[in-house]
Amino acid sequence: MSETATAVRPQGGPAQRDFIVDCDSHNLPTLDDLKPYLSRRWSEYLDTFGLRTPSEYGIVRARWMASRADSWGPTGKPPGSDPEFFIEQLLDGEGIDIAILNSIMMAGQNMVGGGQPQEFTNALMAATNDWVAEQWLDRDDRLRASICTPFEDPESLVREAERWYDDDRFVQIQVPFRTNKPLGHRKYWDLYEISSARGMPLALHPGSTGQNLITGAGWVTYYYEDHVGFPQALFNQMASMVCEGVFERFPDMKIVIQEGGWSWVAPFLWRFDRAFEQLKGEVPHLQRRPSEYIREHFWFTTQPIEEPERPEHFGQALAALDMPGRLLFSSDYPHWDFDPPSALPTSLDDDLRRGILGENALAVYDLPREGVR
Image (cartoon, rainbow, N blue to C red; front, top):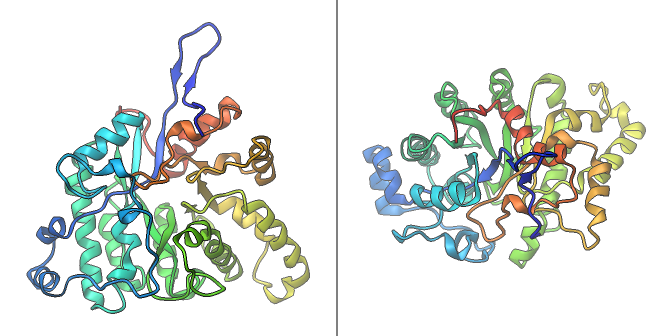
């Protein structure tokens, strides 16, 4: 969308600028970036063996790492690898007040796990966090980050998350939403225990931690299919977490869905609630309808923005969702389908627009408004 959505002009006064929080932007360390943060053993392993290649079922992305053509910086480093260019192009260029970094290294665990030593995956995730803290967060106080964890190794996952909990620049734990087990599985509950106790959201982001089928129908042929199919995994993950009783056990959990859209949520909840009335005898541990858990525990980022052919359908979908405080602006920089803040339609009322652009994120992440501009 090309309509601008970031200027507010009170009656009789000058235009005021909205506070903007980008809840999903990406950086990516090169292998050379990580070596100073690896032990000698794993640095030598990286030089000798490298990363495991994706399986033959991997999807060919649109451009390198699905990046926009202009995101290669003047140093020649890959998109998301040069913090100064990132700051220039996204924070300064788009007027972003706070950007939350989700490292692509976390989303790419299908390239570093399974076929390589688990300890190597653990070391790469730890090195990524060290690199983010030292090379990015120390550089600009507008940056925040997600904790990268070796997700399928619960003990190491908890240990790595706890290493960063006292650094308030890390505001969430990044979780790939294509996992080896559904997210309601007990193997992940240690993570939920510490996430809930610390009030730190989990961010469910595209990515995988193994070579499971990525759809319920089998392997896809085209990147296009994969790109539009993210909600399939999220249907299953949301149902798993509700039905397994995650939110009964952890009533303070916060889940942020990223890059999965939101317009499908309302029809999914209608179906979920209707089936609950018929089948709730199978899940007597659930004390509320599924929609009540979802509305209490989930937030959704906006990118890629929903763009119906009839613009009025956008507002109708928002009304059906009925979760105005749960939408969070995201750009997905530096990916090719990047959304600037102006992607939000101007038909939104001022309070809703301000909430989506920044106010909702300030609340869920407990972010400061002052001292970041």
